[in-house]
Image: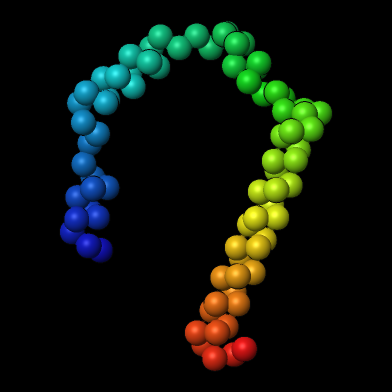
Length: 77
């Protein structure tokens, strides 16, 4: 394994980040249900549904173009 990767895997996080994480965890209220309002916001939302369809179409187009380009480079067209 690359020594830099090994060092990165065994290095502790910066003390400031660790302290911040521990503070956030200590102050977290497990009974707080406010997060539940985040889920389901897009249910029956036509704009969200349209955006998801456009994103899917875009990904399919990009993937198709990428495969066509790979075929051209490899001489399989």
